[in-house]
Length: 96
Image (cartoon, rainbow, N blue to C red; front, side):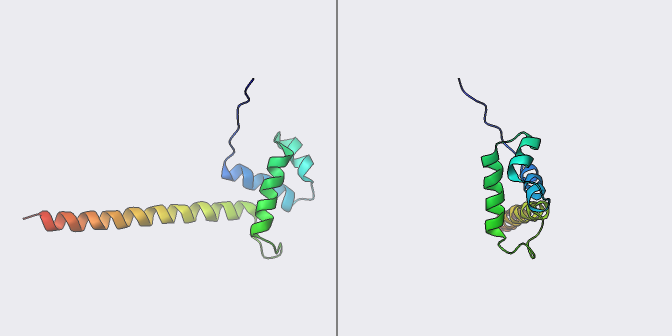
């Protein structure tokens, strides 16, 4: 018997981590409430705390996920822009 592997969005993970980090609830309690495996949530929290060791200066998990998504979008748009500049230069040379 095979099980279906569930995939969680970055927003869902950030919300779940925020419940643990900001709230006073345990990983087990939040995992039960959300219907996810405790080890998955524990890994997400461990990863967040590893990236942000000082909790006083760490951004909220939701904000961190949003910033990461925006940075990825900026990188993608910069790559597209560079490609379009090269294509425009190429076609400008080939026109009579």
